[in-house]
Image 1 (cartoon, rainbow, N blue to C red):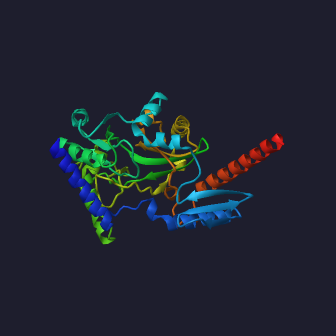
Image 2 (cartoon, rainbow, N blue to C red; image 1 turned 45 degrees about the vertical axis):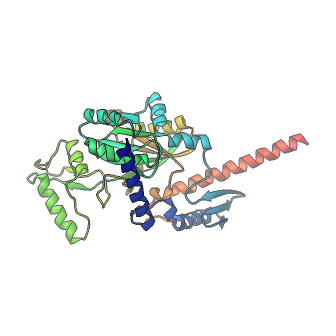
Image 3 (tube, one colour; image 1 turned 90 degrees about the horizontal axis):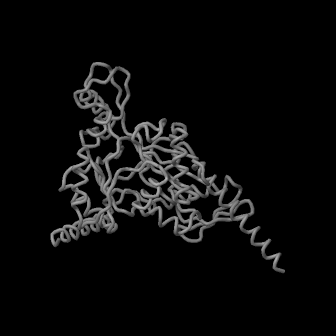
Length: 367
């Protein structure tokens, strides 16, 4: 017990030092204030309105005879109870599962009950994920955990963000963020991993070698053999010696992080996948929003094929994210702002106008 506490203290000190130096390389919401200010300004202009700064990160958007306030990436949706529920991952797994939705097999434990995690690992030899029971942005999350030593270290990291920890089975597939606004899925993006295409004669290892030569010439990060690569190949029935059929395109990794880490990897969505998501998964996301009671939520799904129901592919709803960050849902080089931002603000302005009209009507009836 004492050794565990000392290891935890050492890790906390290390993280504090890294964060103080700004050496983590992670970009979070607090680093995107200028980007969001520009984005909301363009949305206000598109609505024929204006954006006024209340302070450095809080703005008031006025348009169409109504107004709403914005805190960086956060809009005026959902009450504190809904926000607290969404942050409680074990609770949401329970609620979603009870509603018949697919969630990962998991166990809840704490730092001083590591046997729970060790037992889970033995039942999932292909890998597990350890994370805080309440967290966001990949903080405290370690993927592809295989050994007790790794589980211990991952649990210590997760415990820096809260006492309740979770271990989940590593799920095959890529990560999709489905945005649900007012009960309807309005947009989806994917963290698309790198892909290779078979030529009918080359082994996977040879295809990787050829691709890495191209990447080196282009000064891009190479594809190295890590656990994500091994896991991604395995669920497709491939390994380094396999010879994929000519024309077969397959993901070589599920994660597109250039630093090739297992812990605290930020999800970078890089593909609009709205048209790829089948009706079944759309309905799952909309049901997840209804179960939570959220007006505006990002539902994270992991699946090998978004065109098929989750129950057919072994896919799952990984988590639900209230106050979803809209920078994931557009690509600045192509769009001025995400259309979902415009839809969300319009919904809020109409809601504010209705509330104001209702308040006036009640006031008049009392006179």
